[in-house]
Image 1 (spheres, rainbow, N blue to C red):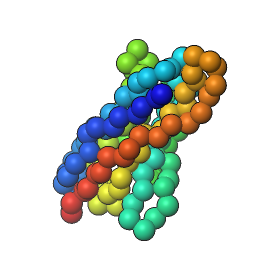
Image 2: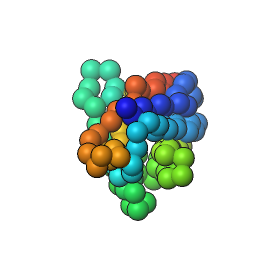
Image 3: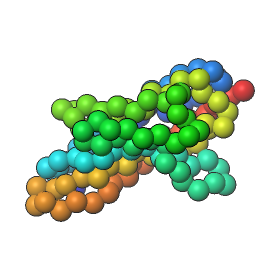
Image 4: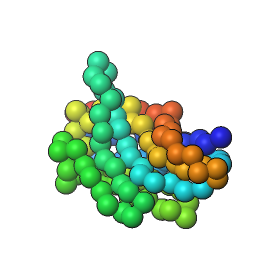
Length: 120
């Protein structure tokens, strides 16, 4: 079994910063791409940022230049540094990871989500 556990959500004022973390644990052979998604009330879940095992990153246009995704492969952890936060960044943020098991089967896993509320 594999678990993704997120942390770092909370209430922050507009213009402020927040750092999210997501740690993967369990039966893991390797972790391929890791990413962050978010879902605001009444909206579909959307990609925020993704990082490959080699460190290549991609961002949604709405967060480009404000958010930074990074990962620590030794800790099986992905981070999302969020700066210059706006009220429209308010959402539940979900971690996603493509993980290969010791039996060489790969699938995507999701964390439970962490709420970020940006007040104006």
